[in-house]
Image 1 (cartoon, rainbow, N blue to C red):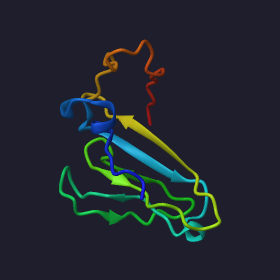
Image 2 (tube, rainbow, N blue to C red):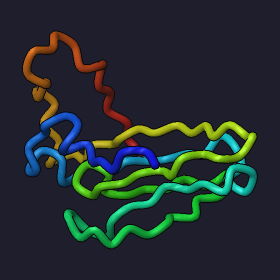
Image 3 (spheres, rainbow, N blue to C red):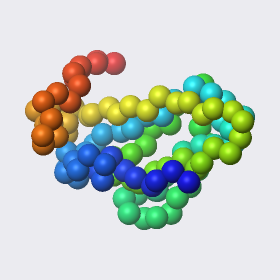
Length: 113
């Protein structure tokens, strides 16, 4: 099994900075082949993991910054691939924040929908 984590624990973000980020997961391979999907808590530190059942062509959106999540080990002959990225919500996102000890935390862009 992959390690259970949340971005809060991995990047030491403050909860107030991260609570309004959303993580998006886009499967690039068909989960029906690998029999894998992301498992996440319903809310922070609940421990009530449940599968999201994201299908090929769908996008999962969840509180990955505060809710722990994982994908079980792949035991099939197929490779699991996905895109994972986060979106900050205006009014709650601190565009000046940088992880201590780093000089560049990727460029940030504003997208209006």
